[in-house]
Amino acid sequence: MAVKAAPGKASESVVHSSFGMPDTAVVRHEKLDRLTKDYPRGPHDQPQSMCPAFGSLRVGLRMRRTATILSGSACCVYGLTFTSHFYGARRSVGYVPFNSETLVTGKLFEDIRQAVDDLADPALYDTIIVTNLCVPSASGVPLQLLPKSIRGVRIIGIDVPGFGVPTHAEAKDVLAAAMLRYARAEAESGPVAAPLQGRNPRPTVTLLGEVFPA
Image (cartoon, rainbow, N blue to C red; front, side, top):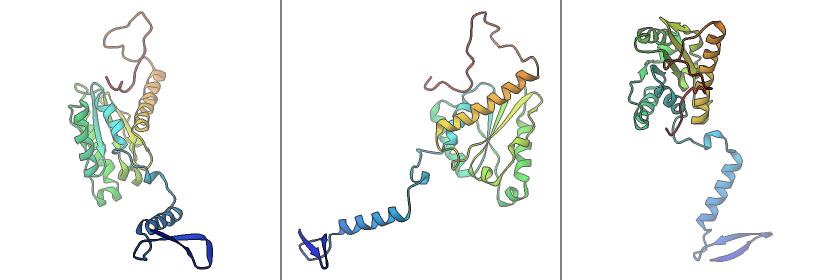
């Protein structure tokens, strides 16, 4: 390799190969520098291992007497449910399909409400968690308008879009915060059900969500 000064620019140099052509590595480096300058890095350049909503999904699947419904693109739901089976979750996950028409006209929300009503069996569940993924969240599907309970089964709706919740841990926090809000509202409204194992005279700690690994 030979280094030659560029004409009229003594302070700069150009690397040439033995054939008199500029080295391709240098040219590529210059292009990358220009690309970095034109397009600054952002959150989109720091991809996760997979959809962040898996964090909240995993928590819900590990809670007793809790059903889970996902609303999102079919490919997203497939990936989430497929992966959940590797984390000890041997439960079915509800899915409400949609298309452009049901999304735009608002029928998707009605379909979600019907699915929740069909699933709300107090003999099987205490809670149903409904999660909006990217598309329904961006479209403003209003899960907050779902009934707070149906036949005694609590209904908790959360939005966990990948573009707004960057990590699994933060997705868990979204669900935990929603459960805490619900629990606080119940406690403020009057007496709540006693623990299944009875009352312990010693101090206790209540855990909402999962302890992982466990």
